[in-house]
Length: 296
Image (cartoon, rainbow, N blue to C red):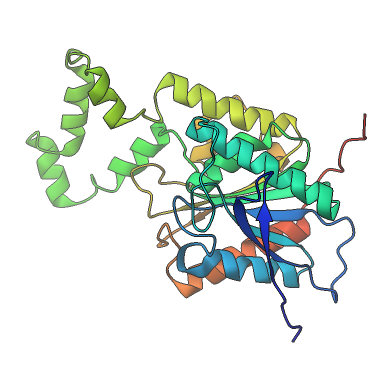
């Protein structure tokens, strides 16, 4: 077995971000292989939940792809930024600085971004802004709820005898949902309450923002892998929800979509981690990522 020699790096103009490079295997030749950058999942250190990022990086490296696991500013071992950028703008700046350094020091021209949860959202938002990004692998990205979501959510609950009885007697949750929709609009929340609650994914502005992010990525020729887990029942609960949430977008053959049943959000099960890693590896090997655009 080939010995893996990983390298710690300081990234960014201030050398303030910490990353670990897992180099591509010298025994496997993948012509013009894109480089993989794995972003933080929430506030978790670059090893990822249940060391998943480490295992994924080493599997992809063994398959011929160089990989960087990184701590974005203020996470893990990385220092916070000192420019007072808003959080999303700061993350976008971090990713751009990472790609700039990979290009300057390692001649990386094409990149695949990988992220779980917030890392998935950051990946898709950034993907349409930088021609160097040719692919994104998204695990449990933010997806607005759809009509299909509610059909799946309430459908299996109506099948049981007790559920039917509650439905007839008006005690089923579906009646509460209908009453909320039909009742007069509640008084507007105070600015402090609204900020504490945060925006809903179904908010038209949020939905439009996400649709625009996916649309820009698709227009940029980015290939997408999206993996949804059954652990996020409050957000998504069926395989096609991403397609149904944004029916105007021409995902076509640019999207590989999977739904993992009986799988938690952090892939705590070794079997589910192995399944995910195998899927990402198969997608990387089987996808025809676009060539970098010619230099202007």
